[in-house]
Length: 138
Picture 1 (spheres, rainbow, N blue to C red):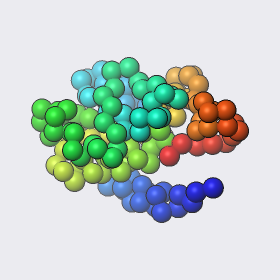
Picture 2: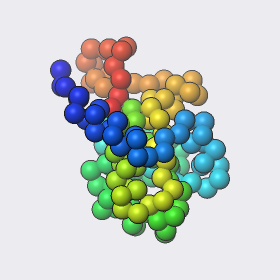
Picture 3: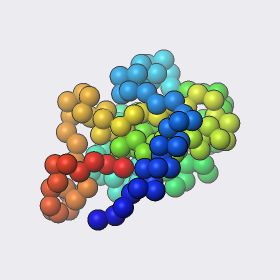
C-alpha cells in the first residue's frame, strides 16, 4: 500500500496558506458566480462524475491551462479534487501564480457527495477490485 505521508504533509502546509471552504460554502460561491474547477485525473471522472458545471483541468496541467479558462486573476475559483489534498495543492499553486480569489473544497468531491447524500465510489470499485469501505480519496 502506498505511503502518502509526504503528500499529506505537503497538502497540510498548503492548507495553512489557502482558504478552504465547506461544500455548502462552495455552493454559495457558485451561486454568486464562481467558476468550479475539477482537478482530478481523467480516470477518476468515470468512477465519480464531475459536478454539474465543473470545468475539468487536471492537476497535472492546471498551471498550463488556467489562463485559457479564466478572464482575470481576480475571478472567483472553487477548486475540488477527490479528497481535498490535490485541491489544496492546486489552490496554493494558483495563489502563487497571482490568482486572488481561490477556494479549495475541504474534503473534495467525497465530502461534497456525502454532504448532499450522494454515493461515493472508492478506487477499485469499477474494476471489480476489493471494496474497502474505509478507503478515503486523496
